Every structure is written in structure tokens, then in C-alpha cells.
Length: 115
Ligand code: AMP
Image (tube, rainbow, N blue to C red; front, side):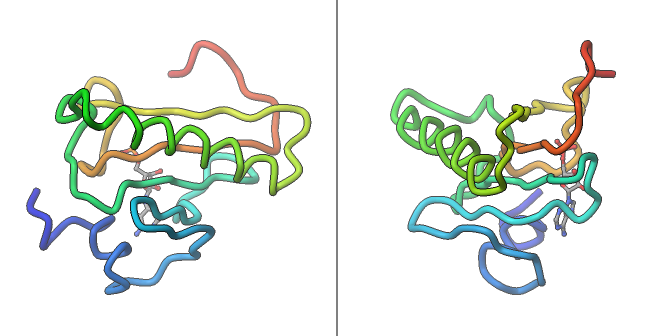
């Protein structure tokens, strides 16, 4: 999928609506359109990267910032009982939107293993 047609790139560029929770020079966070938990947000890099497999050594800071932002969002939501951060990679990993994103899920007790 190209950057021009990528739905998350369109959110980053403000071309389609989303409920934004955070924006900085490298990351955007917004509510998931089809929440799988009472709180469900996505943290995405502003740069178009299709899957985790495109990440390189030089992206270590970006990935760390994604995780820290996910935890910060959970804290802001008062998820003191815990939360789940999820990264799906590729079709077998359950990825449906091919722009790297971190799921932040909380507000209910999660089960394990995931489906
Ligand atoms: P994944 O299956 O890991 O690729 O997750 C993609 C997520 O993106 C799903 O949870 C979808 O509900 C969510 N999603 C798809 N389109 C949008 C959108 N326009 N705004 C917000 N979330 C979306």
C-alpha cells in the first residue's frame, strides 16, 4: 500500500477524521475506529512503514517512543489495573492496516492466549 492511499497516513495528514489523543514530530495517537476494549487507541509513526520488518537499527528510538507513548496514554486514561500493548505483523500476525501501529487496550480484563 502506498503512502498516498494508506489510511493511517491520511489520518497523520489530517485528510480523514480521527479522535486524536497525541501528536508530536514523529508519532500520532488516535482512538481505534472499532474498539476491542473500553479503551483502544493506536500509536503510529508519522513516517509510512508497512510492517515491523521494515524497521532498522536506526528506528530503535522510534519504537521506544511508541511504547512509552502507549504507556503514557494508559496512565492518562487511569488504567491502574493494567493494560495491553500489541504489535501485529503481517497477515499471520493479524495485521490488517499496513502502516506500523501499536494497539493500546484497556478497561477490561484481557485473556491469554490471543486468538
Ligand atoms: P491491525 O489488525 O493490527 O492491523 O489493526 C488495525 C486497526 O486499525 C483495527 O483495530 C481497526 O479497527 C483500526 N482502524 C482501521 N481504520 C481506522 C480508522 N480510519 N481510524 C481508526 N482506526 C482504524
